[in-house]
Length: 47
View 1 (cartoon, helix red, strand yellow):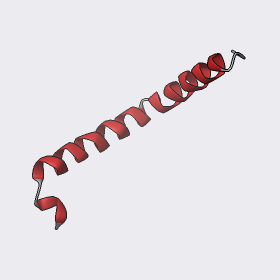
View 2: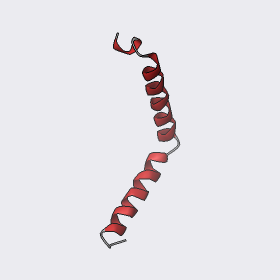
View 3: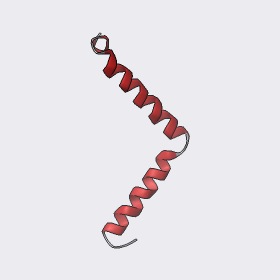
């Protein structure tokens, strides 16, 4: 299989997926989205 050729890349990918899942479970996705909306609104002069 392709991922067995480069075990380091596979390990980093798995760690990244684990951190993404942990962040979603902690509600971090909502926080990031809220901050992104605020920054966007400030850039166009509404917020």
